[in-house]
Amino acid sequence: MPTGTHARGLSLLEMLLVVALIAIIGVVTATAMNGGIDGMRLRNAGKEIATQLRYTRTQAIATGQTQRFVIDPRARTWQAANGRHGQLPAALDVRFRGAGQLSTAPGQGSIAFFADGAASGGSIELSTRGAVWEIHVGWITGEVRAGPRREGG
Image (tube, rainbow, N blue to C red; front, side, top):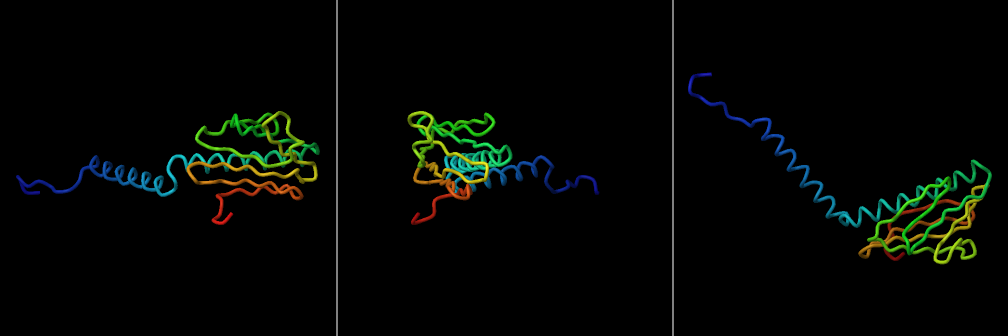
């Protein structure tokens, strides 16, 4: 290089700042387009409940003994097989529909899974700001289906 000439270009720090800004803009945009933080909480909670229901069913089949999944909509808590338990975010509204005679305490809902894979059936509905996540348990097959409420559903 001739003397007195400066090389033009970007430093590593400048490149890293540009990449970081692009990443931040991407995350903010994706969050805003998918219902924001409450939408993420709704999806995560719905997927967690569905996972724990499937786990409880698997334990009933594996042990040959009836297992229960218990949810308390007012306290926003749940209990699954083998002492698993958790708390749902306060921002979510929780509704349970199922067999009332299986309830272990007032206000709680319970879904029983049997050794053959069948279940007592029921549904759990989580909602926030107009968005709804539904979890259905089939009473004959014990199949757990979960996802956002479809239009017209």
